Structure formats: structure tokens, C-alpha cells
Image 1: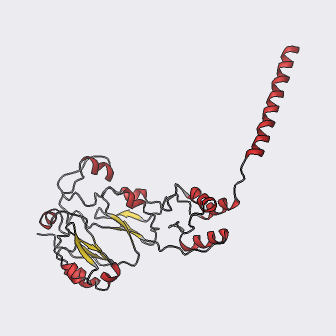
Image 2: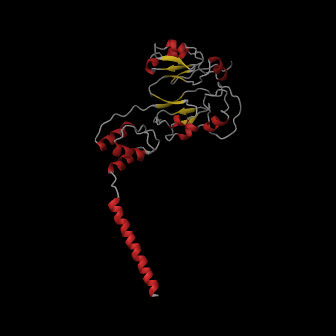
Image 3: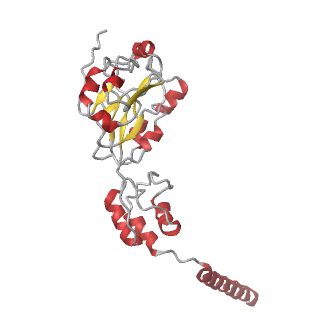
Length: 275
């Protein structure tokens, strides 16, 4: 019994010794966290969207305090968050103009030729990688909603025309939907932009027109109608170089397009779907 009791006492003593050793080591070796990191993390939206260039809000907060990262990189937070962080850090910075996501495709089922019926996982990435989807246009929206599912701000939904719709007042311009799209047909654009080339098909006009009635056919009429130097033809597509200049003639540029590949915000074209 004495042997057992002695063993218990020794083990308890060793346990107490190592516990005290670890406690002292922790106290001596621990690095105190700057309280500003926690404060900034609590102020950030907590979406962990990565738009700031860091893995999440906690990492961005640390980067601001410990690395001197710019305080205006949180798109979801906007001017209010920038202002509060500025007060904590004792610096000033202007909030960046927050862009908004925009779909550069109008290929709904009534205008885009369907070449097959897609049966498989409901994922744009999977469909694009395996069968290229069910549309004859291999550039257009696949309509399987990867962009909607990845949006953390409830700023997108799938419309009845099988195309994603953006709720601009909810969109923070984080860019997650843009990164998720396997066909690069979502873009971050200025919120005040009115005129868009809503097509990314780079095939020649005669080919693109066969697969989608609202495709750009590179006729150049919009380029001629827009202010000089504000648009150009590139890879069989009309490209906007200066949206502010183009917007000054938005209606004219929109009306001159024979296929209605030019999109005017808030205005929906009546496309002839019979021929």
C-alpha cells in the first residue's frame, strides 16, 4: 500500500510540476495580441469573401494592424467601415467606389439555340468541363447557378429565363461570382454604367448569329455611333473602352445594334425570335 501511495504522490507531484511549468512558459513566451486586431475584426462584415485579397476578415484585420495594409479594401463594408477603421488606426482613407456584378450574356432559351439536353450534376463548372452544356453557343451562360450559390450576400437569383439576375442594392462587388463563372461572362462594372456589350462570343458574326439571336456580329455600327475612341472591334466583338463617353450616346448606340447585343440598363429589347 505504501508503494502505491508513494507512486500516486509522485505522479501527482509531477503533474503539478509540469502544469506549473507550462503555465509559466505560456506567460513568458506568449505574444500579446494588439487589441485593435479584435476591434477591427468585429467591425468587418464577417463575410470572409476574400475580396480584400486576404483569406478572411480576421486575416485582413491582422494585416491592417500588423502589416499596414490599406484600410479601404473591404468592398462589403463600404465607406462606413473604412471610417470606423480609420478612427481606430488614426489614419484617413477614402472608400473605393464599389462596383457591381453584371452578366454579359442574354442567351435565354428563347434566343439561344439548344443543341442537346444536359443530364448531369447541376454545376456550370462540371457541365463546361464535360459536355459544354446544352447550348450551341459555347461562350454563353450555362444557367446552372454556380454564381448564385457562391454569393454570400443574397444578391443573385436565377430568373425564369434561366439566367442569373443581380440585385444591385445587395451586391457588394466582392467578385466571388466573377471568379466562380467558368466562362468569364460575369464582370464587375461601375454602378453608374448604362451601356454594355452583352455578349462574349468571339466567333465570326455568321457563326455566332446561328447559335444565338442576340449575339454580337461585329458589324461595327455601334462603334461608329459611339463617340470616337470610346469603342472598338476586337476578336469579333464590340468592346467599350470608355463607358462614360459611350453612355452619352447610350440610346443611339443601343438602337443601332441589329441583334440587340448592346444592352441598356433598365431597358429590355424586344428581340425577334421567329427567324
